[in-house]
Image (tube, rainbow, N blue to C red; front, side, top):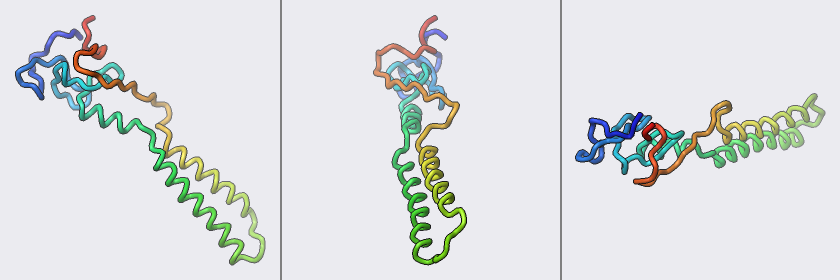
Length: 137
């Protein structure tokens, strides 16, 4: 695709020609409106900001999951020692699996989906080089 202006005017600047369209919402964009180059494709400010936010790890979510699960497993310890006088078969194995499951659930809540590469997100200033898709060949 070449960097020649498209026929459609820019959605935000009707007087100016567009250079391309946002990959996500398909809105026509001029040079100053192409706010992101994600994986070398043009993105508008709204769509690029959403992808940028979605790609951040959620450490608070992982910490909350870990706290809840480990708290429940620890409550089993207390209940076992206060209210059950005799031994319980496989009790320590269940506790170990509970703690390990909590770690796995917290990691899954924080880590990105497997087999999908994280996007290359570049916040673009007006006048800086265009994303690869819009550069002339």
